[in-house]
Image (cartoon, rainbow over all chains, first blue to last red):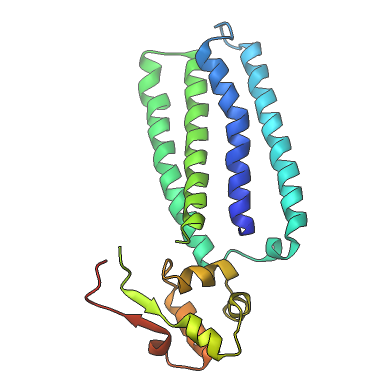
Amino acid sequence: MSYREKIAWLSLIAMTVTFGPYFTIVAAGILPEEALPNLRQMGLYAVVAFVQMVILGVGHLYLRRQSPQEVRLPPDERDQAIMRRSTTYGYYILILGMIQVGCIMPFYSNGWKIVNTAIFMIVAAEMVRYGVVVFSYRRQS
Amino acid sequence: MESALTNRIRVLRFLNGEMSQAELGEHIGVTRQTIAAIEAGKYSPSLEAAFRIAQVFNVPLEEVFQWDATATR
């Protein structure tokens, strides 16, 4: 498995183990709906973002030590093709999300619902992007 | 789906002292995984990379890559 594929796996796992519980808590309605700024909601998001940064930081350090020579190599033409493809798929999801939160939701929703939908769509776009990277490396395309 | 592009990289590596995929990759500036993908017909290299591969083996391009116009794309 190449270094770049390992990084994509790491990013996918980090997002799943942090934003998975975050959106489960949000969807379950465990946090009370308060007016902005909802400090409990902000606190939960801060914890999730911090944990994700720690996982990514430690993971990157570990993977760099595992394959130091691969880290220095610039992406070759296939790596670049995979990055282009994955960014295109992620971009479509992101655009859909931004239309939803910027043009549709303001007419019937407000506050943290819009914020959380925006976060969800950003996370979804990133997961699709890294998912396409992993899929492309797995099938060698 | 059958690829229209086939190659003889595995054979040429064997004929050149069992050159490894990593060695070939180093010569043309790509990773071992990319050489494996090209060899398996899963990834079609750029024209420049194809010429570089042919140059490493010191053979014309058509001895490395073959294109079948009738194959399903």
